[in-house]
Image (tube, rainbow, N blue to C red; front, top):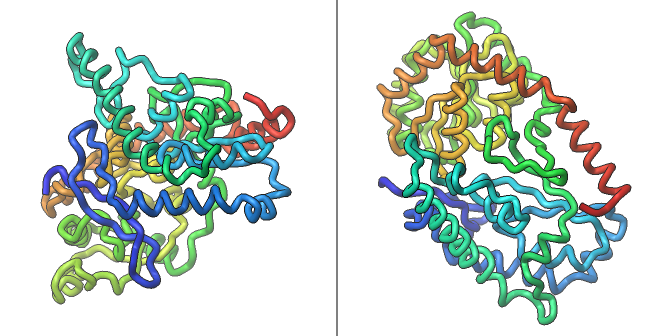
Length: 403
């Protein structure tokens, strides 16, 4: 259904930690209306965290730094951090949630030239658009206060409630999950450090069962980072993508297991029908993504385009087919498209014919790979490698624990 979004909620099924559920987005800035299970689980976790400080102190008495996520979890974790005499490092992982953190850090980008997420600048960003952008910003703050702060207030122990502005003032460093290369709105401040690409510094090597199919097929390979079992993009989208890929001459490395083909993707004939195509499918539960994207045979990444995958695509200059599901993924997908490295097809709009056309465009049009090489060079040619930058930031923090 148009307007639906997907959210993670706690699972009540044995052996599962979470469920992916669908629901309509709220009217203001597409902010999700959080399920009561999400709110109640956060309140319970916060209360347990703040009332068991003696046990936690015993477990962390050797700690040198306190690292905590911001935006969605900030009130609880920052309140807890105030009980320790340690430098506090905040972690920002959501482009939509980041503006909440920028607000309390006095780093909000100019509203005259930057759209409040998940909105984007239109071609004619005139007086009225700027006026409504300011209104959207205060609506954004109001909605987040209702969704993130108000539900947690009753779980805070008496005497522990601190103004959220004071809690943010105690932050010494803020780590951001993306880079200014993919987000021109990213604020510049001495205490902000990008950690984009850090997870790809050390990746596993490609195993023989995957390497051999890559080497044998001179047409190249496509890496699909959509887990089959989880069905994040939906059954219809996944079925259309499977049929489109089957007709290509490429080796398709799919993150998942082969048995998942029959689990709601299609009827019992799905496997036979799809395998009649010319593509060779390789299934790996957790393939080495960075190594696969850097392989000479690699041609295309298919992903929901979260921050991690977008960073990997820019780092190696890989053309990308983005199939976003959540509002954050829509934002990052559009940024990658604007950089000239991706084509974006929302999950709800995926069809087999459309997938065939897009895959053909991305694998035959040399402009995507040319642009990818330019971006990869810009990303690599930075004064400090990301691991060195993060290490320098943390070492400096332990020597001088103040902002």
